[in-house]
Length: 280
Image (cartoon, rainbow, N blue to C red; front, side, top):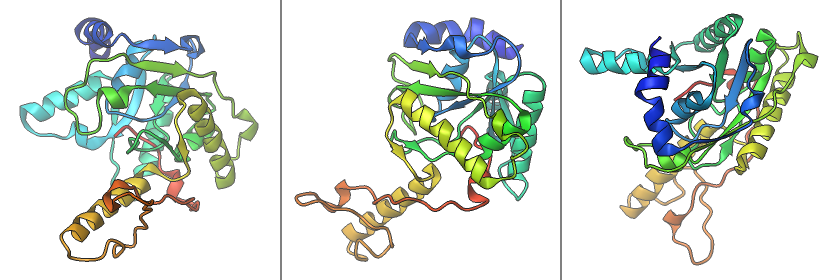
C-alpha cells in the first residue's frame, strides 16, 4: 500500500516532473509472472528511478542497516525503504548469501519482480564492474528470465556522498529477457554461473555504453582507498608512495596523485563471486 502511495501520489509525480525520466524497452517487462531485473549500479537513486518507471512493483534486496535505526529517524528510514520496495538482508555472518538467496527466491516464487545489482555495490567511477554470480544462481534456481537494465545519468544526478540530487534528466534502458533454461540443474557449477553472469554483464555493457572492468567493484574501492592513503602519507613524507603495495601508474608530465591504481584481471575464486548482489 505504501509503495503505491509513494509512487503514484507522494513522490512519483514530483520526481517525474523534475527529472523527466526517459524509458526504452518498457515492453520487455512481463505483464505478470516472476523475473529478475539486473541493473548496473551508479547511484543510491537507482533503486528509486527504476521502480518509478516500471508498471509493476519491483522489490530489491537491501542491507539491513537501513531498517535497524533507532528513534524517530530510524523508524522513518525503515518505513521509507520498505515503502520503496526494499527487503532487509543481514550481510554479516557465513549465512548472508543463503539468506539473500532465500529472500530473493521467496519474492520470485510469489510471482513478483526482483531487482538486483550484479556488481554488488555502486560503481566507484562510473565504469561497469565484474558481476557477482549470485544473480545467475538465483535465475537458475528460480527458473526465471533476467532482464538487463541500464541506468543512465543517476551518478551525475546524485553522486556517492551527495544527499540532495541535482535536477537533470534520467534515463532507463530495459533489455530483452535473457533465457538461461538451457543450464537448468547446473546451479552448483561455478563455471556455468560465471558464464551466465558474464553474459548478463555483457548485455549491461551494451545497453549502458559503460567501459567494462574485469574486477569486482568492491575490490576496486579498496584499491582506491589504499592508493589515497598511500598518496596522503607520501605527501606527509611518512613513507614512499609504493610502500602500500598498490601499484600506481604515472605517465610523463603527470603528478603522482593524478592517477588511479593500475587495475589488472582478477582471478576467480569458487566462493568469492557467489555472494548475492544487493542494493547499497
